[in-house]
Image (cartoon, rainbow, N blue to C red):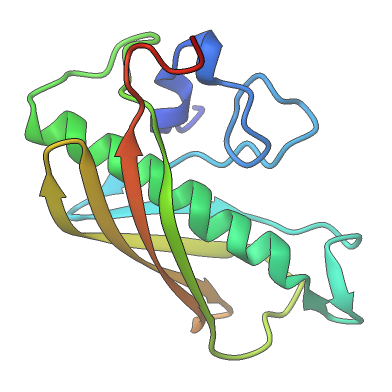
Length: 155
């Protein structure tokens, strides 16, 4: 059974993101979902995502924090406003600010687990605290301010 994430419910118009777009077949296609009061995504880096032998490139790690944060914003907003996710009705968020802290080198072998906790929901903005784990250890932390896309976005 396929695990669905909030990204599976984005409208086609907003499903092309390199990090999380289900329609971007060259992208990471992460899926962010609830697990209790935390959001979770899992991604397994490929050998070419390397910084130096054996470790993940920092830009990829920042992208995972970023996209997990916007997905977490969408999930939190939907929960807060009683939106039941159905095909292509998920609220879509973009990054207002991103802070990434590299705590230790991230091994490239095996899956990376990205977990988020919602710190604040205020109007169109959601702030989440994100931790990226590898091999049972936190390697990267971050904070994402996610902003709901207005209806006239790009017009």
